[in-house]
Each structure stands twice: as C-alpha cells, then as structure tokens.
Image (cartoon, rainbow, N blue to C red; front, side, top):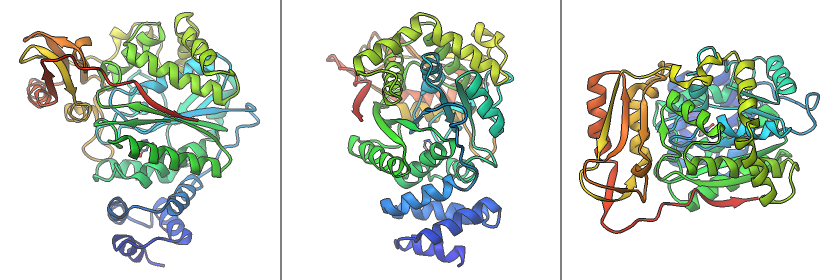
Length: 436
Ligand code: URA
C-alpha cells in the first residue's frame, strides 16, 4: 500500500477501506507519513467527505493509535463531555467541577485552540503552573483523589488526534464533519469514559453553521459512541454570538471563576447548568431533568463547584493565588472599547469574526506549535450581545491587545462583526435541542 494512492483515491471521491485508513493513521503516528501528505489527505477528505462507515473506521484507528484507558479500577462510572468548538466556550472549566462536586467522576481529554475556536487546554494553561500533560498514572490518580481531571492528547493517549489536530488548525481543514467527529470521538474513546455528553455548537462561531448540520454531526458521533458501548447524549447549543462575554484564554478563566462563584453572564451560567444536568442524568445520579438542573445549579451558589475547581487546579499544579485573585492572571497592556456607531438593537455580534480577531491578537496559532498569548482577547459589554439596546457611542466590547497596532487592527475588524436594527431583536436560545 502507498500513502499517495490513498490520498489520490480520496481526492477522486472513492471510499477507503478499514485497512487503508489504518495504514494511513499508523504511518502518520509512527512518523513515516510526513505532514505534507497528511495535510493533502485532510484536504482531500475535507472536499470529498466520508461515509459514516469510513468515519467510524477513522475514529477507531485514531482512538486505538495509542493506549485506551480502562478506568474501572478507579470508579465504576465515569462521564465526559466535549464541545465541538466555539468562541468563548469555557464550559469545561465550570461543568467539570460542578459534576464532580456531586460525586460523579469526570475524566476528560480536551484540545487546544482550533481555527477561530478557543481550546480548553490553552485556557487552563493561562493559570501559571497548570499542567495538561499527564501520564496515565497521574490521570487515574487524580480521578480517584479529586474526581475531575482534564488532560491533552499525549504520545500515549490519542496520539493520532494530537498530530492531526495541530495540523488541521493551520491547514484550513477544520470544518469537516468526518474530521471533527473522529477527532472528538477518538479522544473520548481513548479517555475511557462510560458516558459522553456532546456539546455541539451551531452558528457562525461554530464549525457547523446550520441546525441540520449540527444534528447530523451529533447523530454521527452518538452512533459511533454507542457502537463502542458508550452512553451518549447531545446538547445543541447556540454559537451565533460568543458564549458569555469573554473570548481569550485568561479572560475566559476570569469569567469561569466568576461563574463558579454564582455570578457570571446568564447565558453561560444557563448553558453550564444544562450541560452539567445532562451529565448527571446520563450517569444516573439524578432521575429527572428538573431535579438534575436544580442540583447542578445549586453547586454554583453553595460553593461546592468552586471548592472542587480549586482542588482540580491545585492537583494539576496550577497556582491557586491566580484563581483566588484572578486580577493576577496575565493582562494585556492595551485595552480599548469598540463603540456603537448608531443607536439601536444589536442584531449581529458575529462570533466567527470575534474568534478570528482573538487569533489575530495572538490568542490562537498561525503555525503549528506557535505559542499563544494568554492575556489577549475580547470582552463583550452586556448589551453588546444580540438583542441588547445601545445608544450611539456606547461600548459594545473591549479589546485586550499586546500592542497598539494589534489593538487598532482588531477594532477595525470587529466593526464589521456588528449590525443593528431599529426594532427590538430577540436573543437566540442558549440551547436549541437536546438529543438523549
Ligand atoms: N473539538 C475537537 O476535539 N476536534 C475537532 O475537530 C473540533 C472540536
């Protein structure tokens, strides 16, 4: 078998066999397939797609490219959640501790920023000392002791996704249904959870822009998970505008800390409660959605989710001084507001433009392995979200930048992210649908 033939076959729209997919993944992980061939493969796949059978084979090849964890010596039932990617999506930082504080273990493998979407690992690393590169023993030990752990792909765990993820980020091959489904599900299968809540985002700031596409992605991932013996639920959440107010690594940690203290933006709080409630339900810790939401919400006001978050940060080496006093987190030197050019109701606050602006500011990567600047990003004003009423000159958002030049460029770009209406505009629902 030759890699170039596999690429050519996919380029011409043919289906690949399980053996061909395995050969490609094994060769890429072993270092025999160079990045340029892997990039060509991803681009062919982006244009030609895959059948659900091929996607299942790709997921399995990626999941079994390293070790797959069996966590049953640690806990009898483990839940996980995964977002399909969005702007301002700091959900894991809040729901992991919420669910673990109710005694349901959460063992999770996360990713880094991808295209315009932020990544949980980059957000957590803005807390000085926080370590996302855990050995299997460390992963299990923390799950046993603290009940919540978040790690990245390693050479042991889902190495194929580790390599492909970084490559896709910088080769324009992220928004492909089979590549997203296999990336997410391979991590989930490798990390060993018994049940998975998929947090599938839809809208301009998501990789699936329409509800039918988001549902198709959710159903495909659920089918792959069930085929491998996992319990699956999918929450389809809105991503036409950023989730919450903050987009940018350290800025999102600040917002997560606020939310864990029972404050924070209402759409983000509601989203966290809904995702956590689904995790509790699927784990059998609660019996009705209403009970589940009430118990999840209580963890944000009674201090239990915050206490669990501190344990989690400390266990992964994070310096607690920076979460106890988030003003100590990295801060950008240049901050200025984008102001409304006219009075009206916000009709568009384009999450994709905001996400790409954060990347341009240095919060994401232009090339594989680029460092990210934890301090930069964007914070929306409360009435800078869809449906908000503004007068001319009111701030819509604030840009946090490393230089005066990047600040000016961001403000120019972001002016195109907004539209206004003279008539009242309804904000989009936080959750469009739940598929249990
Ligand atoms: N999250 C992932 O882990 N992979 C993707 O491709 C998109 C979101």
